Image (cartoon, rainbow, N blue to C red; front, side, top):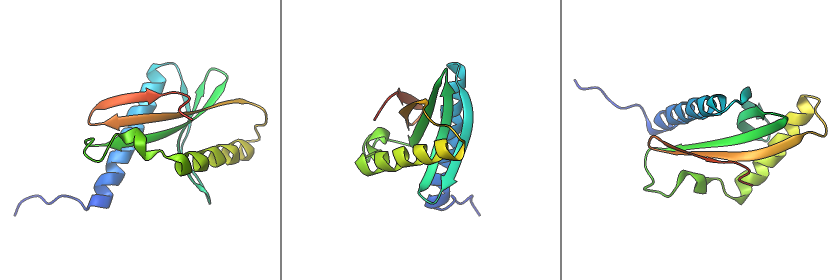
Amino acid sequence: MGTSKPPTDQRNRLRGQWGENLAAAYYERHGCRIIDRNWRSATGELDLVVRDGDTYVFSEVKARRTDLYGPAAAAVGIEKQRRIRQLGVEWLRAHGLGHVRVRFDVIAITGNNLDHLPDAF
């Protein structure tokens, strides 16, 4: 019997993990340090928290196999942006950080192409 594909939700989760690994490697190649990955609270999850010099970067990673359903970055709409901002505040509080410089990035991956959108929102 042939090899069967994993269920769609598992494939999506694996693609998400692959995308986050690719994004983390991208940041590290550009001199940043990964502080946290997949940080969760009751509000949701932050994909990556990165230190870029004196700036804390909250990075949302979207990875798609193709752009058949639109560009990966389009999946980070207004509601998702609001949630990521709230999660950023929660992360800072949980780590005892007050007035620090922050940035919200999107890493959009379609196929093997990575687009970094710094200060996306």
